[in-house]
Every structure is written in C-alpha cells, then in structure tokens.
Length: 336
Image (cartoon, rainbow, N blue to C red; front, side, top):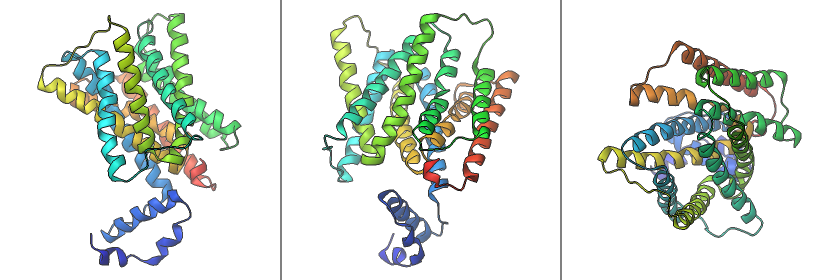
C-alpha cells in the first residue's frame, strides 16, 4: 500500500482517534478505505472479531478429537497447545516491538489470569471423568450470566429484562442441544464443573482487564508461557502421566491446528472484548457450539438430530436477540 493511497483518505476519520483503542481502529479503517472498503465502527468490528474467534474455537474440540483418535495423549495435546502458542506469539511480540517487560502493577493480573486458565482446564477435564460431557458443557457455557452479573454489580453495565431472558433462553438451547436423557449425576463432578465455571467467569473478567492494558497478544503469550512451564513441571513430577505423540500426518496436522486455532481464538476474543465489552463478547462467544456442530458435520461427518437442530436454532435466536438488544442501547458500545 502506497503512502499516496493512505494520504488520500478523507481527514474526517481522524476525528475518531480518542484513545489507544480507537487509534488502532482508526488505522485499520484508513487501510480499509484506501482499498475501497467502508468504515468499520468499533461496535461492529468487535462483534466480527468475537464471532471469528468463535469459529476458531469451534476447530479446537474437532481437531482435538482427530488428534486423540490418531494416538495423541491428552497430556501431549495440552503441552503442545501451549508450546505452539508461545512459538506463534513470541515472533509477533518481537517484530511488533512490544515490550516483554510488564509493570509490577499489571503482573498480579497476568498471574491471576494464567492460574485461572489452568484451573479451568484442570476442573473441566477432571469433571468429565465423573459427569457426562454434555452436562459439563452446559454448566460451563452459562459463564456469560456470571460475567454479566459481576459487571452489573460493579456498575460497568446495566442488564435489562430482555437480556436476562436471552441468557436463560441460551441455557435452554444448550440443554436441548447437548443434554442426553438418562445421564447419571455425580456430586463431585458437579462441584468440579461449577469450579470450572467460576474459574471461567473470573478468567474472562480479569483477563479482559489486563488485555485492555497490555494487549491481547502479550497477555496470551504470558498465559501460554506460564501454562507451558506448569504443565511440564507436573509431567516431570508425575512419572505415571503418559505422553503419546500421534505418528500419522493427519494426527500431527490436527495437533498443530489445535494449538493454532486455540491461540488465535483467544487473541481475537480479547481484542473484540476490548471494543464491545466483556459481557457482550462472552454472550457472542456462546455461538461456538453452533460453529462446532457445523464443523463436526463437515470434518467428522456427524449429523445433527432433530433435537440438536432445535437447540441449534434456539441458541442462534438467543444470541441474535441479545445482540440486537445490546446494539439498540444508546450507551457507549464499549460499556455493553
């Protein structure tokens, strides 16, 4: 792109630069308009980023299933996921000339987010040993309600009745799509699932606050680095943990894809949350089961039952209505 093309952009867009967040967005729009594309507002660009992150997240369980079917152990899958994250993000941080050093005031927030991310993984993978995975997912995907309630009581947002109704409609859609009749309920599994839910909610809130200060790329780099060290330490201290590497091209590709899409999804999510707020971002992120179901059809040949299609439509409707209600507000979109 030439300097002349950038210089030809109308000056009216420079009035949008009010903060670092808007400054970055203004630069993006300058490039888009020089290519003949229309201006993208913070509200809609944030929504698009979160939806793209949901698509990326949908690749994670599907690629994980392929990798484990090809012989990968869970321990190797998790370690490789964090290792790939470090390998991908370090060059980006280096070439963008981002300072790796963070202030003492931000360091506790980074450590907190990293610990919560590991707590979420530990609780979730242990919960499915005692509880049906569908029920665990339903509990975990109620995290937008927790994020919204905490943000509401902190005075960051105001939740109206319509949005509350959409949250419960979302849970009903998840229950319809995922839950299987006749599943036994284990108390310890429920405790682990709700522990994972608490970690998920607190992770979204704390990580969003840190990402606003140091950026989503640097935050995810430190989360991956911290997680990689912790997982390697656990493996070294526990000789009974099995490490199995997939020996097929399909399995290796699935491992790389799993790590790539996992990291990309979180980077895009926190970048989008910076523009539209943690509550709207978390609710939009619940579209991930929809994309995961579609990818399961395309990649794994799995077909949805009538019950699953009904749940699919309920989830889609709840996300669409919630976003419509949020977009209709007159408040600053970054506070929704």
